[in-house]
Image (cartoon, rainbow, N blue to C red; front, side):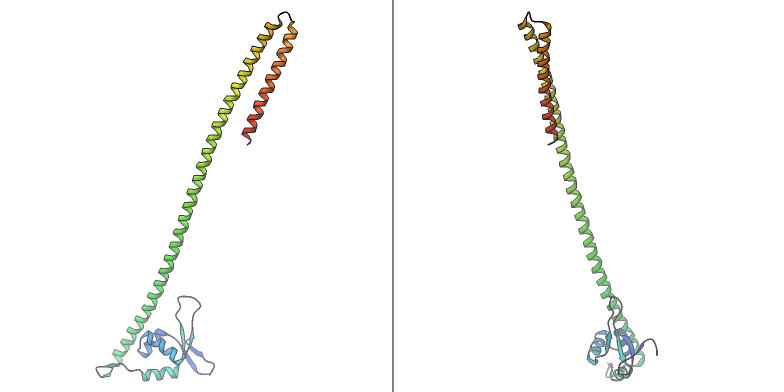
Amino acid sequence: MPANEIERPSGDVGLRLTYAEIAARLGISGDAARQLVRRRGWFRIVPNRRGPPTTVVVPEGELAGERRDTRHPVEGGMTPDGDRGELWLALSTVDRLSVQLTEANARADAERVRADRAEDRVQEARQQADRAEARAEQERLAADRCRGEAEAARGEATMAREATKAEGQRIAAELAHAVGQRTAAEVEARLLREAENARQQLGRWRRAWRGWRGR
């Protein structure tokens, strides 16, 4: 059995033809071939994916009957065989080109959809990059503020140490003047206590500074 024939369940032998091939054999248009297939109820094989044309299983006897019944009047008579063959070829070519144009338009539409989706993804990526850059700028500003506050805190701590030192010296002078006749050991003990108080105050300043940095 030829490759383009199929055995139908009834036992009749059928030809595997596309709509364009049916139109070419019968000398009709592609739309007329489709209407004929639906009217005669011929078995159709529709591909699962886009691209390949639909194949129709046409019984040879029925196709021959359709060929005999097909007429192409030209000026009140029958079309000569040569002209009819050219007409069939032209109709077949037009139908094939129409199918190809439809498929090309469908592919172009799909490409446009993919291009639009790609452009949307690029736009979204740009927006994400802009948001990330804005967050980074905010973090840089916050870091600058923290550095400024740290510098100010260090300046205050230095001033506090200087003030504590000056206060210790003042107290030592006052004590030396007040005790007058007291022994050097008593003066030294007082100075040591004052120095310890100054160290404790400095320690409180440092703890406060560490607490501020750890917030």
